[in-house]
Length: 521
Ligand code: HEM
Image (cartoon, rainbow, N blue to C red; front, side, top):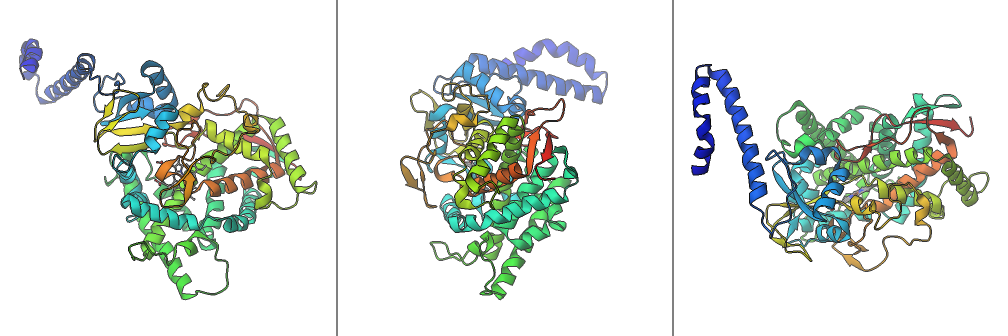
């Protein structure tokens, strides 16, 4: 109080003058003074009070907003600048939250391998995901239930189902190209930002979600999906429950889509044992029982289906778009990919098949390299529940703060990958799968423990992605089909666009134009 009145004392005569000017001006003056004062106090606090037991704080002028804009616009530039200044561990302010970034392979390990008693993913994500997925699933349940739900979902992602999915994905790609206004005639240009979201949605819907959902996407379901998807916005980090019109549309879409899935479950139960195709995820989730004897309700089946659709759509859509943009930039690579198709499937290009896709090494290296430079999730967050000592430092991160991993930073670091910004699928030649090494089971099957790795596009630890194999089948099938259909390039003046991080996923800037020539017009 003493310091405050000393600071404000010189302003006394100005305040008297301003009081003559009336309420609106006083309000403006009051607001400006409040902002100036809080900036001054915030700066003084950072300069004068440094606590050696806490990670260094990234300098910022405005309390609450802190580094939100710098981080939100260019997360990698922000992380790399801070890393140069402060090392691998530093804290920054994002919308009032204290975020401690832990970079490099050790940082990846610290975040992904955080003990259940120390960190919580649900407290970091639930406010954003629960209104979209629905209650009772994923981050709206205790971690042991999430592990069981992941196990149920993983049961539906088997080699047998993948074999059945490959021809379904090919069919969707060919059908979309045939119907699209962007692919008329023997050659042309196309905006990938308009095409790929539908392509990945239709392929995931037809395979994982079943024929009913795929067919519904040609009607009102597409609009509902879009409204629900709009729930994932940076604003909703702060105001997920605020009745903005967009949030009302999100809630309506969530309820309607959940009902749609529940009706499918009901109909399928009624017509059980009909001998029809039973390979999709809805069949897999029906009639599951938790360890404590509770049955998974139809509502929770519906909510898990929504969660799977959402988790896979953004990540696969971003990756597919980046893959096509990078190969369009290297026409020689497209030629080699086509030659590989002919080598593996014969000159007449036999239909794609799951087992044979694994033999297409260049194709798989292209996917791997794309995920190195463009991991769709650039930030992995956990809320700290009890103070955490950062290995090899004096730092202790207090409860209530957040820790953040960004494996994309180590994946683009010269220390681990030579010429890290170049798109070079051949760098993976002779390298084993990243899933090798010690294994561990968190309750949803054995996974690689390798968290201290510089390359972790699918995460690690108890929250590791369960959709990795499905995503690889989907991406490989789409890429192979595309290469069989087209030669690719760029229209005059276009090239690989810059990433746009404003939607929280690392997407290429719109419209992402490419040019194409049909191999078989
Ligand atoms: C978790 C990446 C596709 C379902 C994750 C995580 C990452 C990731 C990094 C860990 C998140 C964390 O630790 O906070 C990717 C990438 C994909 C992809 C790069 C495609 C290129 C998919 C697909 C599905 C899916 C297709 C569904 C079929 C999930 C689920 C989780 C998860 C259920 C678990 C969340 C948890 O345990 O907290 N994914 N994913 N993902 N992903 Fe994926």
